[in-house]
Image 1 (cartoon, rainbow, N blue to C red):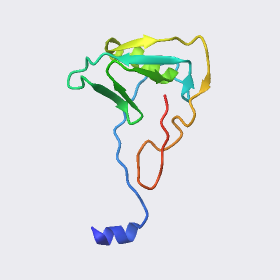
Image 2: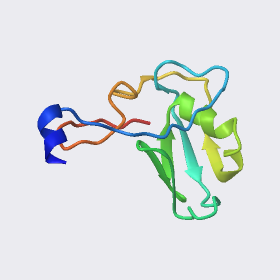
Image 3: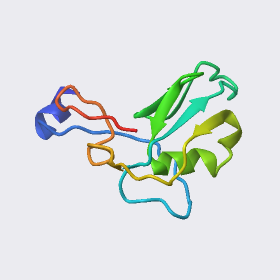
Length: 116
C-alpha cells in the first residue's frame, strides 16, 4: 500500500516465532566451551538439516560447533536423542564473537553475524 509506505517511510517490520526453553544454567551470552553437536537426521521431515533458529541450521552428520546455551537446549530437552554431543563444560574459551547481540533477522539494509 503506497499510502502507508509514504507515512511510515524508513520503518521496517519483522515478525518472529521464538522457540523458548526454561532451563537452569543458561548464560546471558554465548560462551565457548569447545563443544559441538552432530545431527543424526532423525527429526521427521527434516532428515538432512534441522534448524533451531536462523543462526543454527545443523546438517546431518556434520560437526557443528555450539555455545554452552545451545548445548543445553539440545542435551537437556526432547531434542537430545537426535544429536551426538562432543565435549563438556570443563574448559572455557571465552565468548563467541558477535553472538546474540544483534537483531535476529536478515535485512538488505543490515548485516548480522552468526555464532556457535
